[in-house]
Image 1 (tube, rainbow, N blue to C red):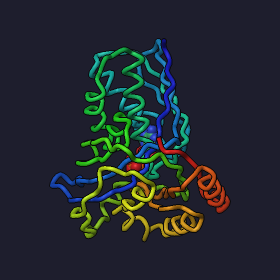
Image 2: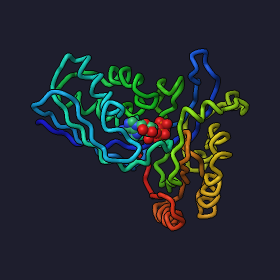
Image 3: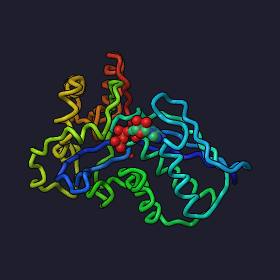
Image 4: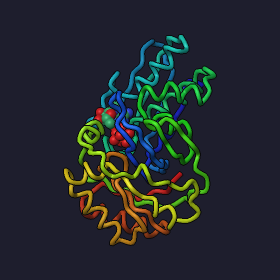
Length: 279
Ligand code: ATP
């Protein structure tokens, strides 16, 4: 076998509490993270000529060492002491700089794919340790379960019983820098005091937990996010929230048909919009 194709799913945050700013400049977070069936497709091929080549062809995503997929392959080959050639082709379906974790998921897929393709034998735990240095969300995509994520996002606890739901995912085609959002965050929500449940038996219980501290920074700069949230709620969503640092918004629906109808209505207003199932 000298080639492997993998799906790299996006994520949404059902919850994002910023607990405190740390002395090293990062923030301690408490998040509920959920993978969704909106995926990049990554093909990794072992070649005769040494070096790593990444091609993506999407505006705003670098092809070379600037790509997290390149850095993931480089880190793993370095640790394994292998000097093989790798071609990595990314078919990008996940909106970029959108709060959907697309770059981190590509990085995680490359760590898992190269490990398998070359038979390197790294455990998932070891891949997660390597991955957190590439991006805070990378370990979550290697974990592969709905999770409570603490620390900078690397301390993961599986959440059982979270219902599979249909979402309408809407992105207004603006790029938001995660660094800019954290630089402009005022820590005032006081949500760190609030306990969040470990078990979610129904869609209503899930919707009751939806909250994102970063909306307080991103929405004033991009009011279109509020417009999308209202549009989704008017369209029958049980809850609607910005994901990550934004600007993507998701609405939680009771069934596939209502999610598809809402996504079509949003696409009709000129935004990127898809109906997807949670994974
Ligand atoms: P998060 O929710 O983790 O903050 P995001 O969805 O907001 O992530 P990404 O799409 O992961 O943001 O990309 C952020 C930046 O990383 C982009 O501006 C892009 O230039 C860079 N980048 C590097 N590699 C990739 C990749 N494989 N896919 C997407 N972006 C990448």
